Image (cartoon, rainbow, N blue to C red; front, side):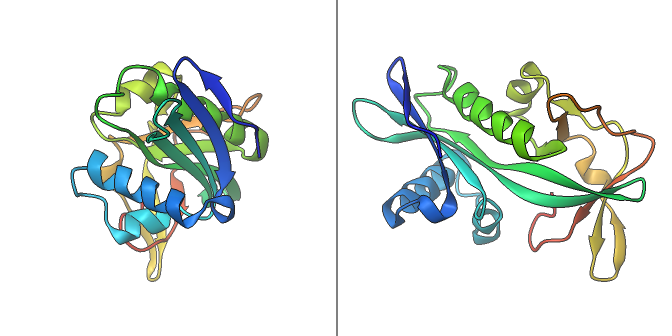
Length: 189
């Protein structure tokens, strides 16, 4: 992947899940449990694996202070199956928030989206929405659904928290047609 880069007092590293050590996976999971106040379950953990992770560490202590990952998902839109980079498990440790670690994580993930996908997508918490909006992510204006075991399932409750970002040089999909995400256990989006 990329060589670590130092910015102020943090170091950024990107790595595929297969390149993470057991200790790193444990550090990331611990950060998720802390950052999401215990509301980060095993299915949420599973959703962030299998793609590329961006890890921000405190250069002095070595502590993981920020994380996010991007995984591939398939999304149906206007009769096409789009390869989407879905951003998962973005979190910054308390005490390091509003100091640039979230921006470092997102910049790394956006480079991956730009280089490998048609579109980036994510589901934002109320706390995280302003970070994504400042970086040019847009609240999806159209309907959302998932292709479930019994067919297409509308997801109206996700329409106020799902953000998208076209990969560099691409246009945003037409919001008059739904984005239909692949099915997964737990939170679909």
